[in-house]
Amino acid sequence: MKINILTLFPEMFSGFKSESIIGKALEKNLLEINIVNIREFCYDKHKQADDMPFGGGAGMVMKPEPLFRALETVKGKVIYTTPQGVRFNQKLAIELAQEEEITIIAGHYEGIDERVVESKVDLEVSIGDFVLTGGELPAMMMADCIARLVPGVIKKESYENDSFFNGLLDYPHYTRPAEYEGMKVPEVLLSGHHKNIETWRLKESLKRTYLRRRDLLVGRELSKEEKKLLAEIKRELGK
Ligand SMILES: NC(=O)c1ccc(NCc2cccc(O)c2)nc1
Image (cartoon, rainbow, N blue to C red; front, side, top):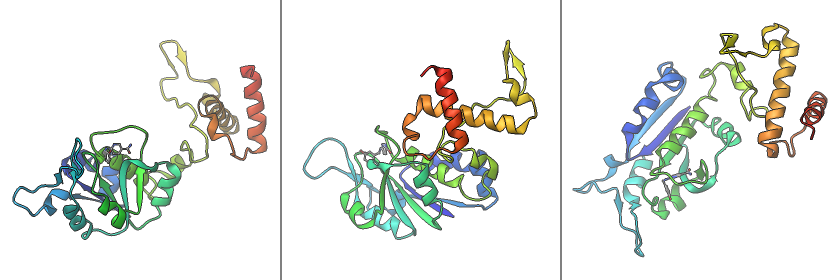
């Protein structure tokens, strides 16, 4: 899979591409992340990438020509990160991870000229209801979420217990030491009894989801075991 990211600030992506899981995946050629500097497509003397908005008002708008030119050099579904987009989530990430190539435009200022959106953008996507100084961090977040779904980038089993992969929030995690400052790790996790551990983890996932994100349970099919555990949870919570 290839992810192109069009940006005015390519240096913002150097750490993202060199460190940790994404860095290793790129070294292993499991995927490609191509950072395209929009500034290279500003052919005027001052390399102007933005200009004042027609109709007046504060802020600047990204000019169409450099974006159209930059888009000529890439392929795949074109995504534009903007507060005006559909909400990004794991389901959309899984869909986008099936694509051979995608291109993400990281907008700046007040956004990009609408003619680029109308004629070139396939999907406007928001990472949440808040405004950032630019679309680079949303682009990085989306690329990270999509990249980790590419086979080989992370170990398969850890993918399966992802929050949202099974529609529930993740269970609590512990590692050594077994006791720290008087705080002990739950006994069951030290028991080596895999069935009990699996049940404990499912119950914790259900409890967290029920308490923190009950909306995720609406419309989610519950297995017989999950129904039993949820009933136990409600009894224990006295709800
Ligand atoms: N919630 C988000 O995904 C998000 C995306 C971008 C962004 N800033 C750049 C920008 C881009 C376009 C219009 C605009 O008003 C601001 N801020 C937040």
